[in-house]
Length: 131
Image (tube, rainbow, N blue to C red):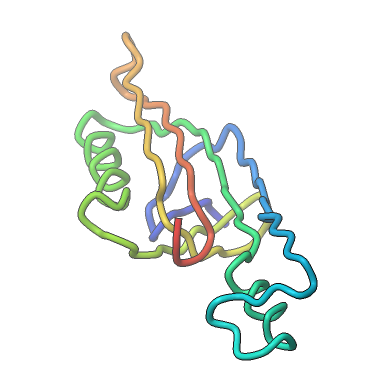
């Protein structure tokens, strides 16, 4: 299985890091939460709005012709949210043998001097429907 983002082959993956952050909100037991219907549902409501976030950082190398590499870079940039809003994409991880529904938070493509048939890139993906 190849590592892909919205069907785009990401080439050679140098690293893939998954960071899960769980927000911490402490409320006194007598507190009520806006939007919660009762004290019993307050904890359920808090769980829904404080869901842990998974950020996936990827660095890789893509090899190809100049035209293929330009198309690759353009495709990644098109997914970055500049024109897509909150559109999510399938990220297929070869390392974890799993598919994630992600937003593309950050795209960094570096053209390496003297390497006309290779680009290095880094991506930050956020699992879920909001970044």
